[in-house]
Image 1 (cartoon, helix red, strand yellow):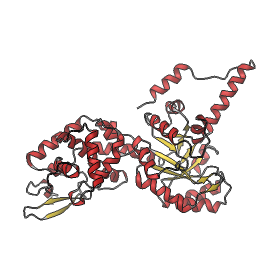
Image 2 (image 1 turned 45 degrees about the horizontal axis):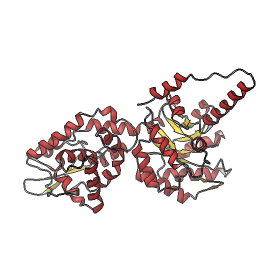
Image 3 (image 1 turned 60 degrees about the vertical axis):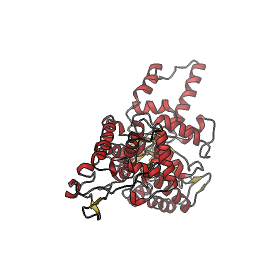
Image 4 (image 1 turned 90 degrees about the vertical axis):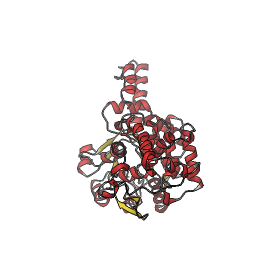
Length: 433
């Protein structure tokens, strides 16, 4: 570790470049020494000093929240990933990575300056390393390279200094820890003392009311979203509406999980990245296809594609065997396969038999089981269930209450109690971040 404090051991020298990855490396503190390093590090430090780490404590792609704090759209995360894959000099570059840097420069205002490089550098260095930290790696960056006085390039372990040391130590440790904390809060809710009770909303108003009532997270209901827009449920017809709702719901103060049905027929990696960049904490991904089930192999590939593209996204794999009256052994086999494919949780709507629930909990081990609110909450908790969802219940109850209220007035009966106008407006305002 002394090497990192010894000025005789320098960072790897990088060549100048007019654009692309070569330009970026040549203008950031990470690959600079002497006065250039002091000046460029100062730029990065000043940018970080203007960002309250607490503001980064939110779900989604680790770059998205930081990009927003730096005045950039969260969608730059895709280009940051491309650049991050070739940031180290020994990784070389590609035309795609060079083009990504050009787009990032444009997003920063178009000036190929050290100020721009400092902003992009912060995003790039927050990408893979912070994702590794989110995934639980004790040392997000296992090692760093230095050039000895003899000219020999050596690899220095960072096992005892996960954020580096000396003049090149990471200046954003507090920010990285805040990002990781925000990205894992939804996951931690599945391993708390009490199961996560996840109510499902269908619009901003219903979600805001649930947040005001103290629920720790909110999911969406695909039936509610589809029916609200006059479309069929589970038909892959509401991608646009679901994403629009997600963009609004992430402004609320709790993690948001989105029901994406079977993926809307979209490229799974693209959909996962888009949801993560928006700031979504998790997704439900179902294996039902109308009256049939998708093959296990295809569904596992879908789950793996989501996790590979956005590892911070909590993927809740829905097993529709009970709803389609398939034998119990199929449920267990699919649940195991989905967990092995990378699913963070398993959801079996319609499962009510206590012995089958207990067996599935044992089978899944540390992977949390999610059921619908069809048995009492305390009973589900005692059986080992870690997440309880209301599904479309609240939406259907709201429709029932609306119809009953209208009929009650028409027939001269007492009108059921309802929230006031001010309460509805207030919930929207008070539930935001």
